[in-house]
Length: 340
Image (cartoon, rainbow, N blue to C red; front, top):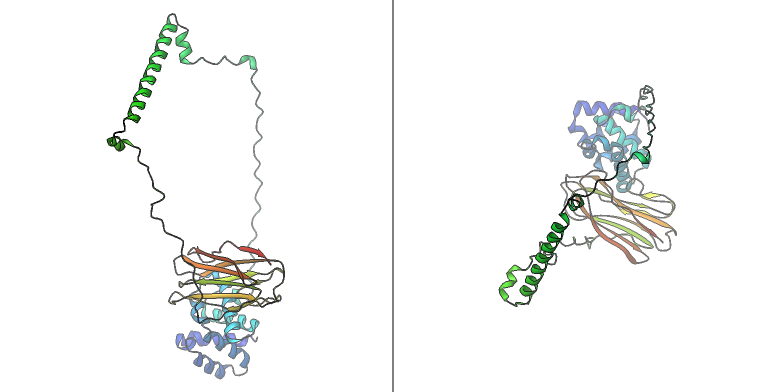
């Protein structure tokens, strides 16, 4: 892609603002006027506007810029059939023109980090040897206070009396307990122990119901199918790693093994309804081996996201799990691993 059109685009953004980049037809007309010798670059930049790249770039978190570039380029490939490399170039060019990221992150490599001054190693002080005390020097252990008492003259008789008194008190309490238990008076029920909790009747929320695919949505199916379903405005992504180690997700919707992300959903905080992403291998096309499936939160609306993850192998559902991802952007679910 020719870099000359970058300057033209940046100048139009600075001079015309949202009136320019908010209208795909205006972008196309203005670039054709001022960069007529770059028709391919103009076409892919216009496609980026039609794919909603501008709005998402203006709202992307700084720490998620690289993820956003891949996500938006993948959207252009899936929804508009654009070339993958050209799509990434268009997203980065728009980001540079809008000032979303420093120009160095889109055009030139980042400056080398300043060398870290060497630090002297910290040496732990040597521990001094501790000489054990001779066993002969150890004093004899002190006797318990009771034995000290019994060693005094006349103390033995006192001890016997104390023991007898304790035994008598225990015997009286045992007899009283037997009489109380055999009385059969219903009023005694008020003295029964009251349980501190009643697990059988305590109100606890039941498991959240599994989400379902809208009936009007046709999804690919076959040997292996993984489906992610959620209903809030957070943008979740389905990730599937095949036995050859290829990860299928929004930025890599197809794998050499035949797996395809045939339905992607880029939810937003103002959207509603049920959102679905689906990865599948056609019948007879899924390789044998170990698969790994998980959900990841691309963007958040400030609240956790409940989702359902469903995996089908050979027409049999082997996972139908409902869980919640926290509000943190980039949060991942625990991976589900299975072998075909």
